[in-house]
Amino acid sequence: MRIAFAASECVPFSKTGGLADVVGALPKALAQLGHQVSVFVPKYRQTKPNDPKTLIRSITIPYDDQYRFCSVVDGGVLDGVQFYFIDYPPFFDREALYGTSLGDYHDNAERFMLFSRAVIEASKILGVPDVFHCHDWQSALIPILLRSLYEDDPALRDVPTVFTIHNIGYQGLFPPDTLPLLMLPWDLFTLTKLEFYGKVNFLKGALVYSDSITTVSRKYALEIQTSEYGFGLEGVLRGRSGVVSGILNGVDYNEWNPDKDKFSVAKFSPADLAGKTLCKRDLLKEFGVDPESKLPVIGVVSRFAAQKGFDLISQVADRLAREEAIVVVLGSGDKEYEDLFRRLNKQFPQKLALKVAYDNALAHKIEAGADMFLMPSRYEPCGLNQIYSLKYGTVPVVRATGGLDDTIENFDVTTGKGTGFKFHEYSGEALLETIHRALQVYQDKKAWTQLMKNGMAKDFSWTASAREYVKVYERAQVLRLAGVSPVLV
Image 1 (spheres, rainbow, N blue to C red):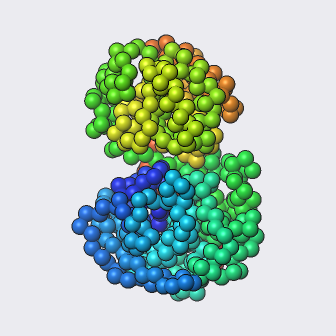
Image 2: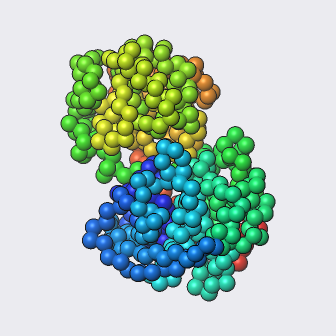
Image 3: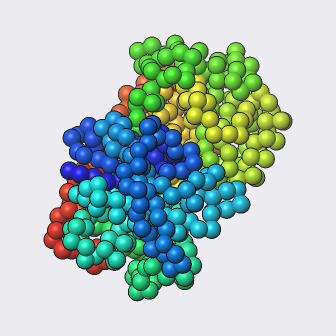
């Protein structure tokens, strides 16, 4: 099968979050299953392909105010996957991918319209795929365009689209006059299509027009069909529930594996855990904490935002800093949480250590050296760090939501079964109580070692998930060839 991915970011070329990891790993897993996979991403300032060559010198993209002309750059073949970059420096040669600390770029609708339409036009030249797999609102215009402006194009009318929601909280909302600017017909601006409380909603359009919809865990696929987690789109998703499925993200164990981690001072495995002690000492030293401390270490690697549960942490932060544990925190985000951790670090320098940054090497060191990993998210579509943590014998402490609930099983001291600690109620007290439970089990070294090994034995590699995606692609093809209109499904 020929599969074309379209996404706004992809490792190793560009990244702001987990979307990039998925778009970097899933195509590789599909290629290993024998499929022909290509990936389209914008060519940002930080995108540095090896030996880039221009494949298509000019693609014309019409706008209401003027034509714009972009090109397609060959990104080469990596791990069996062909990469293409949509190159238009006025839109993509910028400091960041989506915006600055002052907010989103004002022309994001135009930027990602150009990207989406260029992917479609480039595919007609480079080879029309059997299916387009689009990710998040930045590529949501592809299914919208295919079922509107390109509906009668004989090269494309039978090509289905699969759309993956990585986080429904980000929807691509723009004023109504965006439609004529992008040369899109006004009849898209209705309640059953793109209109959303007086605005144009790109994500809603993709949910309406895609042949199949996926998200990144089974639990999240159910959660986003409720008012609590649907961000206003739960009705659209319930109306299309027959084509909505949840497929858990996998992880790349070549990158995240204690037995081969290039960032760790020592390697370790379930058969020989001695190296983890050395990694713990190295981690504490890295954060300026006494490396000989015998206290358990709780790691946090995250964007500092309420969605990630930092409002809960702030409720109990002072009490947490006084526990018989060391908390090491890596990340950045909302100023109120950065300021909170800076204050606690100043007040308790040997109990709460902080680095405000994005640092991949240090993230690996935290996974390798911490005893526990904290993820108290309000919602979490999938989550990857809890899966990394399992592999490193770093016990997850999580809230039971989305992919966190799907991947972590509560530990039972009596049976010795389970991989971590979960809580359901979204409150600081429930979080602190669960940490207390984990710290209590930590004192039982035999039980704790069993718990570590339980997690390290889990396999969340991409192969099984890739096979599930192939089934989704095949079903989308059947629906499209049968002439089933997505809007009416």
